[in-house]
Image (cartoon, rainbow, N blue to C red; front, side, top):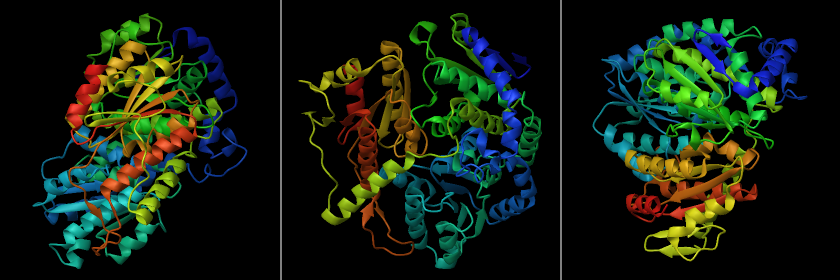
Length: 561
């Protein structure tokens, strides 16, 4: 199936795709989605009819252009040089893509995204913005996300240490839903601006709404151009044979055929798009014992290192085609490949919309409801229990390591006589057909750690020919966490935790010093809560506590493997 910007070579799955695509057209699935017909996915309208506002995001945001432009103009006039956006998942991933892809235009403030509760990371951002005039964006749909609120209270108090209350309020902006807890707090603290988003948009579908567009405008992205291009695509997506309809049918149908590891190969300039689309697909499809695993950032290998559970998606700019040869080899070896070609960076707006629509079409094909996230709550509830125990007893629940060697302690359900054999034994005993391995790093997000995790990931992929994923915690809890607990249970989970050099208190309330919990405790509670939620779902988890020296610990594990 060819289109100047979209090519599919589905190999042995071509016939099953054609059957599925004919069914999509016959049942008018795309047309019914545009009419907000909940019966496409469910017998109940709950969390569907009030979750499809993103279909109209391009035109809704175009109507707000003047308001956004006036806001940006005021920020520039007031001499802000930095912006710190605080959010998780859908509230932080699209702004991060814009920031890392476009960078800040001359004369616009530089933007940073904080989505880690690691105290060393929070402290690092504190140092970066210390002597700068910084605008803080507090971004959360629900208005009560624990991580986002913790960031807000901490940086509000830090600002209040040097400025009065009125001036502090002028440095804060809220993006949230009407009637949320954040709207209430933002009014009480007299925030500079409150952007109230369309409440009928779920977090991971919010890239083209205020959550993505306001931060993009702040760094000088031409949001009018971006949105107008996206609006053309959305208008063209109302027919059954649209590009999004084809894409969604392909990824849904091939997942049913066992090719449920959707592996992204993305050219360097737009590579950050992968993290956004990873959340969209994982959280939307990973439930009720099914799911599509989005594989982002895995090292690109020759065909013999992949099992036959892959569907490759190659996204590149028209003049950036360096992976072409390897992709052709994969296709020639019989792996299905979808190629998407972008004219320029502004085609990212189109891609946000196309993937949102394709994802809900894939949900139809898989027989699941793609707009809820039933398993995200389980880890949150367990985290709250851990925090409560800490507040009552002064310490988190303790586990007993199965083995310890110097600084590295290992926790899990395996029998080993040395630390060095633990990872290999865990994987040897657990990997079966269709398995995937997820590395969950509850450590400070940092390039040197990422490189070592990528190295380990590549070794696992090549040795076992399995799909692999890496995520920093608690960030991935708002992304792939739903899939990990809701899919068919083929995931094997390797957690990495560490001790904190310097912890930071989280204020109980903005403007007050009292603190009953720290960032380090919150993060450790999230790691323990996530582990327990995975175990409750029958998943296999191995945890390495790396102690105080993360680099040495990761290097050792790499060497042992």
